[in-house]
Image 1 (cartoon, rainbow, N blue to C red):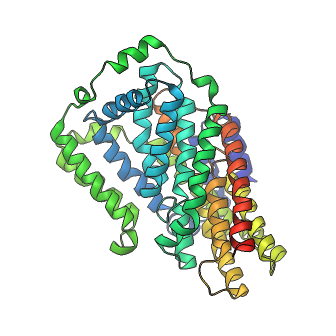
Image 2: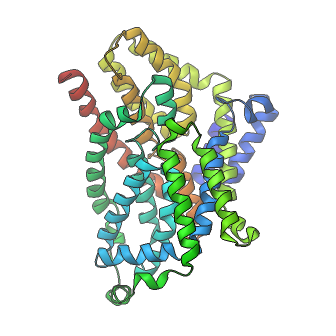
Image 3: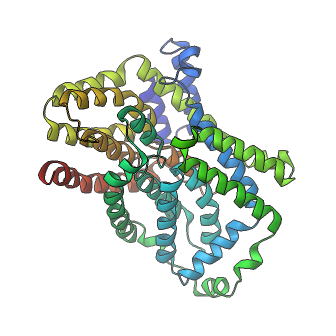
Length: 423
């Protein structure tokens, strides 16, 4: 009930989303739906500190990188490559975002791409909201392709004993197709944003990218740190360091090497977004702690036991629906043990099971449906508000619902054909 009220307040924007999330978190603590130990220290029912410190570390790196002029360079480069045409600009940003999300993770990618987007839209005098929404959606689609691309995939890999190559083999092909479908959707969904001023385009085309770089030494240092962080993300299973540790160490090292004023850098951190995540995690943890999500998951498992095709389809679409309402990270953490039991009961030993891919696709792509369905969505809303380009819950959701429905719909025949017809 408390979660429902907080969700309605966030969706209707009667109060600020941070206040709604914190109010809900305080209320579940007061009534005993959860306690301090579960809320702040439990892995499955508490604040996901890995997510928060990953965000904090990357926000520090972005704050330093912003002072080098690198984002202005990329903005001018993107506009010139697209000949100033807004749809081409969006297509380039979507492709870059999707590819980077597969190599890094979706939250890190939107933190890096959003500053470029603000500058591109300012140069072309086009609204930033459609471009930011498209990037958030692309990050969730692209991140689905790899083990490190989306946090739920890391949980699935751990529970299912899956490798980095397993995700590439089983999910990358369909994600490549979904990116093509998504770019075609962008042409229709955001068509009103593709109008620009020819004079503005001419001015941007006359600029030289190199002139935008303000501090070459700091740029080299920042890119070196970012490269090391990126490599550590990709080698997560080899170096055995959590992405959160890598990110926060990278952020602090870069802050030390930058010789910049720490107080000024810290001001650029999206503290309201971090607080919102903390409140949301506490509320969802209460749902897990009281057995609400577990009951839903067990009901799903009982309904499809022994029928693998039905189980795959219900898991795909059920995960998409539930991940649209609650953040997909705690949802996957809750249902993955149940999926593991279903896989074990099926007795399949010939390789990764279709149920894991149904869960990954449903949870990752379903997170696109609403503004709070995935971490990247929340981060984009926070960045937009800070830049004075506020995106409402429903402005995001009216596009996200369509994209989620279409992409999950495309995955339905993919799972059926690949794992039941052609297997």
